[in-house]
Amino acid sequence: MKVIRNISEIVGILPEGVLRRQGPEMAETGVLKDAWLAVEDGRIKGFGPMGTEPEESAEVIDAEGGMVMPSFCDSHTHVVYAGSREGEFLDKIDGLGYEEIAARGGGILNSSDLLHRTSEEELYRQSMVRVREMMAKGSGAIEIKSGYGLNPEDELKMLRVIRRIRSSVPAIVKSTFLGAHAVGRGYSHEGYVQAVVDMIPEAAEYADFVDVFCDDGFFSPEDTERILTAGAKYGLRPKIHANELAVSGGVQVGVKHGALSVDHLERTTEAEIEALLGSATMPTMLPGSSFFLGLPYGRAKEFIGAGLGVALASDYNPGSSPSGDMRFVMALGCIRMRLTPVQALNAVTINGAYAMGISDITGSITPGKRADLILTHPGWTLTKIPYTYQTPFIRQVFLNGEIL
Ligand code: NIG
Ligand code: FE
Image 1 (cartoon, rainbow, N blue to C red):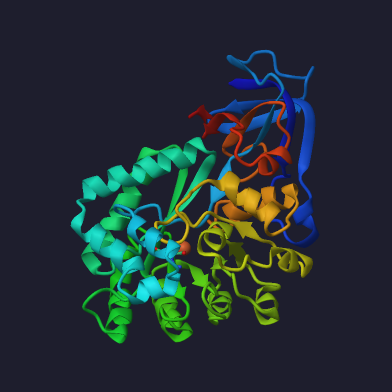
Image 2: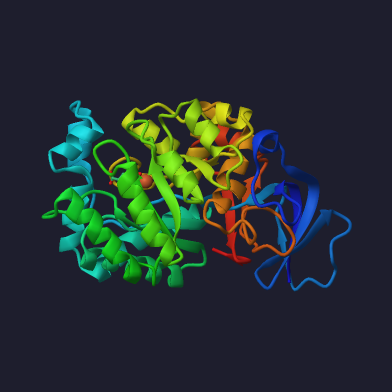
């Protein structure tokens, strides 16, 4: 057993059985000041006020007044990619928009060409550099999508790389088949949708979820419906890219098919809020891509005001959000979306875990859950994390009870 002593405060405490936070609950979190926390067999064994700590602990860690919080749960990333898109970064500085770059054959297709030319070993190596950085920055659960293959061989190459990452890191890794990210080279639109449907049986051997980029210029709600229906036959629950570029109808299709999450939501109306109310679907916003592309930020406060939960994720990818820093995501949530630090914390922990279907095992400080924790340097508070948003705050990351 390990005991962390002299913790200034533990934040993110939740009772067992709480799987997500919605509406007014978003503003609440359990806090215990001047505390200890015990870890055994990779799990949180218990916690309590200093003076009541267990005596027989094998290992004592002195937090010296640091704070303990759950590690981040990043429910939407594309970190398996090859090379970079720095040329497009320069085009963007020159004034080209995301859709213009895509229409010129850049964007996702550019990454797809690069991935095709990169060996599986090299793709794994490049992706692992990013995953290691994300863990060091406090992410303990990471969803990773395919979607730069865009043909059967290369999509499977990506899914194998995601599986290999999953087996080599202490973070929880969830895998999503995003064959419908863009129409692959050499296919007609219709032909590609059929090809994605045909890829599903094999992809389902690797993936936990199925995703579709349901947006203007990419895939329609009808295409999405076909792919989700095919995915459901193989047990793939949907997570949808919706309403990034236009009011796409993707939220409604996602809710109809029991999506675990609908993501992006830079452009939403009352109709999307209505569709989500009472559903099991977690609205997930990606402020890193709003920041990088200069898009509107999701209307998180209105969603919460309507009684919904909100998750925030990094969308780490080479085209719209080249960062997997969840602390920065939290900061954007507070600074640009005007979430309180507690709302942002819930959005990047328990609700992110819910959006990956793992909030029963991680995403909060709860006895019995995996000990996926961040211990801060002494003197930090929850509010300081997004406020002084670039000052290093992490002293140690614990994943599955082990120091990273
Ligand atoms: O979530 N919007 C679609 N997919 C990614 C961007 C992928 C890329 O540009 O490479 C996103 O933003
Ligand atoms: Fe994305």
